[in-house]
Image (tube, rainbow, N blue to C red):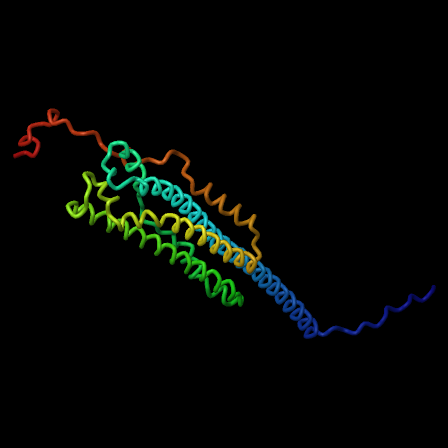
Length: 275
């Protein structure tokens, strides 16, 4: 009978060696798990911050563009007023009370409303300015600051213009004897200061067109600094306008006016108040 080969000698593994290997593998596995979890979390967090910064940039640049569009509208309004003012200023002073000019005077008198722009986006940018500083994008911070400063200047100029107009009209209205003319409209046009105001509409048209162009020029630099295209801004502004537009018709104040009370339908007053 053939002798069976003997099994190879195997060195016994000590229990302490097994424990060390198990501990090492456990440590490596736990460490890799922590690194993967932490790394994934950091990537997600970093991606979220990038998205938030881009959204803030879109809001800021879109807000500035909407302001420039408002300037375009103001310029168009001032151009129309300049045309009407030309009609008014060419009416002879001795004909201001003639019936034939009443319609032109009524249509040509300007009206103003106070102007203020929504500063919500400006506040959002101001609150996140440390983030932009940490990125080292000081050029973007500075340029956006110039845009907002220009917008404040325009707001101030418009409201100064409005204040001057209102004060002048109120002065003429409350001191009618100081001005010739049989009607309030003719008194306005007899006032030299009022006539100067009307003659400045061409200047105002130029000013708003200039400011619209200046803001857009600054905003073009903003887009370059944060790598946002003009198409993205147009889409953002369009989507914002669509979201902000109400679904139904906008009600006017008169829609809430209650019907007039008919005196004959009221109960006896003393019975009503219990006295």
